Length: 117
Image (cartoon, rainbow, N blue to C red):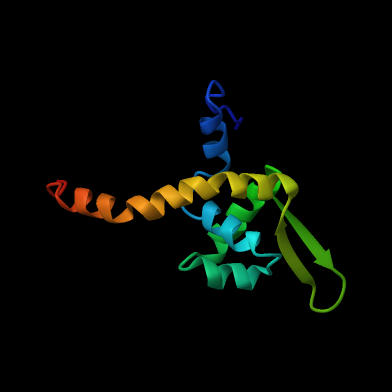
């Protein structure tokens, strides 16, 4: 399966990288510094190990996150943002601010809608 976002708009390209339920949260956690898998799982909320693994692998594939292994027993593995990942995290700052500023409005607007179905 190839990767073919609508590249006529950079927003589409960026959303193709971080546009999932968990990736922005993982990037936010990693913006505070390297984290082990268990730390990410605890910090992210109700995410399964399978989904966390998949999301981290996709972020690694796209050059947003790096996985570092340290020798020893048990194996010590950490995840960290790459420079490209840190730049994307900074770019998401204004989006997060907009979300914070408009959360109550959106909650109210969506509660006024009739129930689906």
